[in-house]
Amino acid sequence: MKKIISAIFVIALAVTSCNYDDLPTYKDVDRIYFEYASLDILELIDRKINVLNPDRMKIDFGFDKQMKTDSVIRIGVKIMGNPAPFDRAVTVTLIPGESSAVEGTDVVFMPSVIPANATTGTLYVKLLNTERIKTATILARLRLTPNEYFHVDYTQTQTGSNLSGIEYNIYFDAKSGIPRLWADENSSRVLKQYFGEFGKTKLEVICVALGLTEDYFDATEEDLDMDRDGVPDRTYMNIVLERFPSELSYGYIIMVNQYIASWEQQHKKSLLDENGKKLSDTLPNSTWF
Image (cartoon, rainbow, N blue to C red; front, top):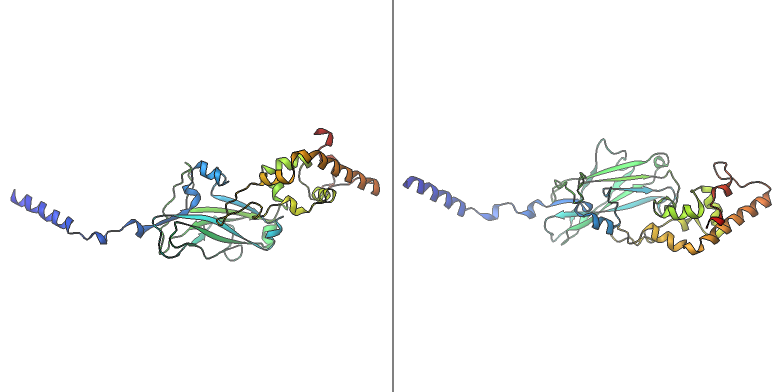
């Protein structure tokens, strides 16, 4: 019995004499992940992030006048851990075998940090506007990498999906040449109601008839009121409704149709689009409104 008591005493003494300063604490193993992984559905909606695919974005160089050279993409990152009194580097790589993008040729990872005394930061990725994106869509499939400051084993998301919180996808090309207000799924419904399906010839005619420039059908980051993390405060639908209010739609159609009629009368032939179709046949009739 004495031996049992003695053994218990020795174990207790060993435990109580343990130096707790040597035990790993949470700050020693901070995790980093893409910020979307911590957002619930309502938060994704509030930030205007695609609820079904919060881990990806699509960039079109085809029309955007602000992106004729390169474009810097900003992606929010977050840590599970404690702030530090100094900047901590964020590191990332292209996933081998899953990315068609080539580092240094298609994308460049710019210096990115979790700032001092913060738990969130921004990953900066420069997309290079090359000849290749005129004929192909490039995929840059990113994965955060561990470094001296962070582990990357946080892979759960709050959206109930099987997405990995340490991976992100950027698709980019310059194939469409469609302005963003006409390419966006929501705002395009308004423009299609007024002008029909997009066409390059049609866009040129509309701009001449209404005294607009092609940029009027596009939207820059400034138009979207982007914050420093690249999150827009406004949508393409907000912008298209401001620029093309419904009460003026009847006048838009009349002016465009009048211009086409005048052109055809002057040139004694039909005005055709780039596909050989009569342009007036591709426009909604003004009597429809």
